[in-house]
Length: 303
Image 1: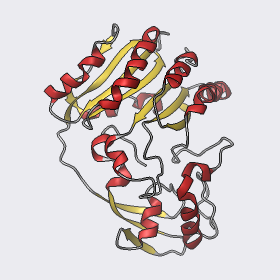
Image 2 (image 1 turned 180 degrees about the vertical axis):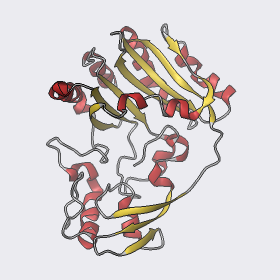
Image 3 (image 1 turned 90 degrees about the vertical axis):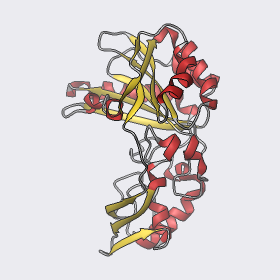
C-alpha cells in the first residue's frame, strides 16, 4: 500500500505509481503501466513482492511545502479513555489536510502515555483551528505541534529501529474506531518501555479508489494498528515477541486483513487478506511466476 502521513490528501504510495520497470522470472525487463501490461501493473500495486524485482518506479509528484504544522500531543495514559473516545468521534469529520494517529507507549522512565501524531498539510492557521478541540482534551504533558520541517516527525521513531535493535511487529487493518476497540486498547495496555502500539490513519484520498481498483483491497479502513516491540538483549527475544503477540491477540477481533510487507506468521490465510482480489492475483501469479520463485513473503500461490 505505502502508508504515509500525507495519504489522506495524496492517497497511498501505490496510488501515485504511474509505472514501474521490473524483471520477471523469465529474465525479461518489462515496463508496466496502465497502458502496458496492465494486469501486472495492477498486481504490484498492493500484491507485495510476489511478481518480480522492481528496478525503477515512475511516480506522480505533488507540490509540497516541507514546513508543516506537525508534532506530537501527549497525555498520561490515565487519560487514555477521554482522549481515545473523543478521537473516535471527532476524527470522522476532519479534513483531508489533517492526519492524526493515536499511539500508546511507555516512556523509558516508566510513564505510560497516550498520544497523537499530528500533521496538517495546509494553511497552518487553519490547522491550528482544526486541532484546537483535540488540544482541549484533558491535561497534556507534552505539545510539540508547531510549524516545522516534515522530516522531524518522519524521523522521530528512527532510534527505535536503529542498527543493533532487535524488534518484532504485527499489524491489522481496522474499519472503524469503535467503543469496543477503545475499551480493549485500554484494557490491553502493556506498561513496558520495550513495546508500544501505533496507528497509521487512512480515509480521505485513500477511499477515492475502490477495493478492486488496485490489488490493495483495504480501502474502507480507518486505520492500521501496528504493534511493535524492540529490545537489545538477545536473551529477551522470546519475551519481546510474546509481548507484541499478547497485545495483538487482545485487539485482533477488531481487525480484518494486514499490511503484507510484513510476513504473516499467524493462522489466517493470505487469500483472506486479499479478499475479492485473491483469485485475480493468483491467476496473474500463475502467468508470471508459475514456479513461485518469489515466495519468501506473504505468498500468493500461483493458480
